[in-house]
Length: 288
Image (cartoon, rainbow, N blue to C red; front, side, top):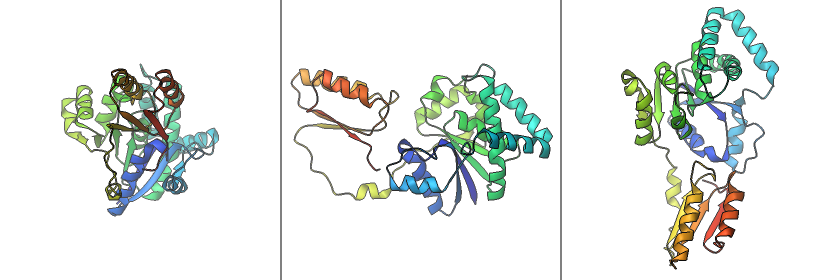
């Protein structure tokens, strides 16, 4: 079976879970087409990500002109479907987190990928994140593409579900994936009861090789390890403040922040402010 994956940016250092998911599907015999809106020029450090970039098609790589051409071709080839999708895009722009011109861009992006899906023979389209990529997938289906589904990770989708029109995206989808029971409970809050059976929990997994590394001796002092992108959603600032409180009480403990990201400078400054340079270590990006 041929399926397609749509992501706003792929590959990406912090999106290794998507890469693992795609590769796992291929090991099960699925053929997977990778489509991303952007990411062809992103800085990558992992060899597998570099290989994935070569296998990915990018919606915006050829600029705005390619979107305009794709939209005109879709209008000429399928005028009724195009008008239906146009109406839907404008409806998605009402009381949305972004004004309606963005939703017209999403429509143009959908026009761009529908021929790719057709030529590949994709029988299903799956998007990661319930934001713009899910809307592009929904519009692609409206334009005649295959059925779509999407994975919701949060917390953005839970912060503004009405503005992201999560209810409409769920209603029109074939199914929806939540990465935790908590995530599913949040989607239940905004989905119609009739759509609850569509929502399934699929946890982000790790490769078996992760467990094959030699065991590390237990450190003499307690060690807390936090793996993730350094960003506001992950809350690493709270961890540093917690370590500071323990240090003031004379409790010996080490914190390792495995990852990197946009809050690296702020975390470095907080570590210095609390004089925790010997107790808190940031590894930077490391291979998963």
